[in-house]
Length: 325
Image (cartoon, rainbow, N blue to C red):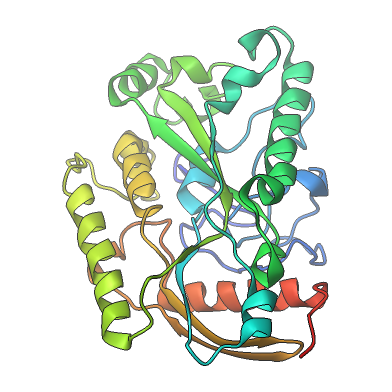
């Protein structure tokens, strides 16, 4: 890995995506859509970007499992919205739309692996971790009571990664050089690097709003924004909260990871549905921009958030058995 690419994505070392994809059903074409060796069932990332060749979770590399921790954390997102039902929506609209409340996260998933260690048997551990992720996704809908069109949206996951600054700094200092530090970081030695996968959260979800009025919806988002900004002020940002092309910027990753955790609690906007029928949708999406969030890599731009939701809804509608009025 080049010293100028602390994080990388499919087909590029750029820190801004060259292409986006809103489905895993795309044609492979190098360099931006490389062939993926990871099984399609575990392509569960929330980056909205093409997968790197061995997958965002690294399961495609059976010879030396080494998932791109930094890149996955840096590029992933956490889509969720406040959901309001317009008074004009009838019973069939509400039934078709359904509900999709926040599912329980799987806490400390690595502790569930066989023997509790990733170094005893790498192949077995990889299979166990895949099983953990697949079981979480397959059970989320039933466990959380998801239903309707929202419940039919494809499930992805947010990997809640924390980084202990002291341990991470020791790991970097003990590496041969900053240029090889990322090569030294592997799944087998994760406990010595300061990285910790604290939870895996199924996505997306929709919190039901207690209001439908425009001004009240504005206030709802404003309150969430102020709470998020307040939490961000507690992040030690002396090294910055973004990654640059330079190798030394990996020193910033504890603050970057903490910032990503914070903004995962910030909603993507408000939704207010009036109609949800077979080919008939009438809804408002309120997704603004705040300059204070622009430097947080995992909180997408307004346009990307709108596009992502529209594609989620459209794809879910393709296979949903609508109730006809």
